[in-house]
Length: 186
Image (tube, rainbow, N blue to C red):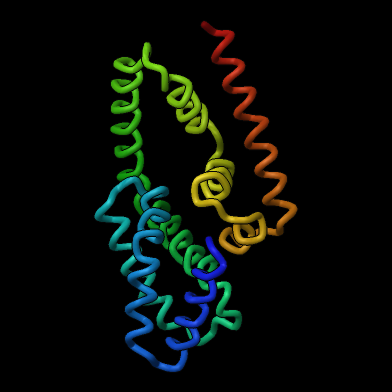
């Protein structure tokens, strides 16, 4: 995230804390899609993700006065969405298993039809990532896809920076091993 974006978000948070409704709507406009992407990454259902984010906005605006460092709005709000998404997953395990089976089926069809295409390495990487534990998938996603720093990931996941570094390292090592194993199987 650019520094100017962080400054604007910080100012909007301060304005929200003072009761400025327009600042609140601008904050929603700037962050809603990103929060939806974060929830969707866990839930894999667009409508449910939108509902979770909507609930998260209620929590965010109820607790925004408690946010001491307005520069931390991004990681703070993402951690709220992450927690709500994980809570939803825990409550809806059966629905999640059905959805995972559907995505596995869909991925297998895509893999079969794309085997000879140049982006096959990307497909192999996606498949290998699926085999990782959730904690490793999350750290990889936040670091490489969302481009958060180690410190920000720690705040989002409520972990120490050293733990985040360790999980990133272990995730990369496991990915290497999974890919190497799959290449030897062929």
